Amino acid sequence: MRRHLEDTYNVQKITQLEDEQKNKKRILKQLQDENRALVKVQKDQEKALHSLSRENDYEKKINELNVELKQAKDHLRKLQHKKREDERSLKT
Figure (tube, rainbow, N blue to C red):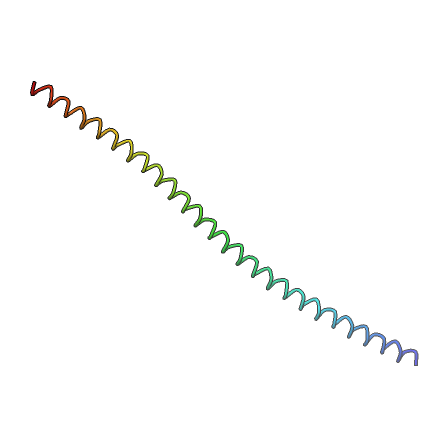
């Protein structure tokens, strides 16, 4: 009888351990799925950040080109003014 009780206890213990194992595997799968989802979100955010960075680079380049254009226009106006003055001085 004692032996029968010990066997029953062992079967219950094994069943309990198997249930715990199944539960831990389920939790592990959930965590792995969550981790995959978080990695995907991270990659998407990195792409978005990189895109914003490139847009900022474009704005910076546009501003630099606008400054360069303004300087070129100023230089052109000065040259045109000088040309008109030279033409006036040649007429007189």
